View (cartoon, one colour):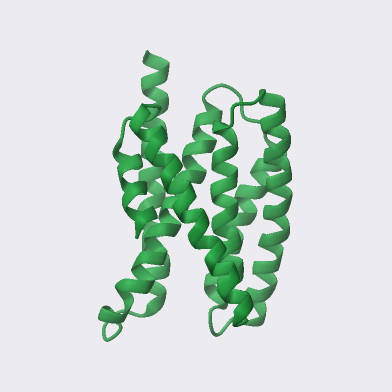
Length: 196
């Protein structure tokens, strides 16, 4: 809930402003704690689905945060590639688990594993320059915000709509609706920076 609220404030704040940076930091910390709790809980009561979703969330936070790190670009690129390698390994694991559980949670693992694989391969193979650094940050942190919305919806809304909407709806709807909004936000930011 905390990551959802502060993430919303960060997302509507002017990009690069003090408020955006402050609430963005709160968002990353809150969602990171939530993901770590998911890893702990899914280890205590084995749940491979929850475990890899928690890892995916941590990947999104780390791969978005690295571009705000106050370090030389070469170090950021190096760390982004290390995070990308972790992402590829995690994506392969998710796809494998998805094939094994194709009639249950498998379809979600295949979808999210495919998304993760495309992000991670991009991190490894393409070094961002100029405005692309901001796009990489915005895309990954936007994805993390979608993850927080998804977690909130699945946990708090899905039970009330189970009679007329399948559970998969709340797992996928935030991604379907949020992804175009992230792209529009990135393009608007880039247009403003180019014009300014």
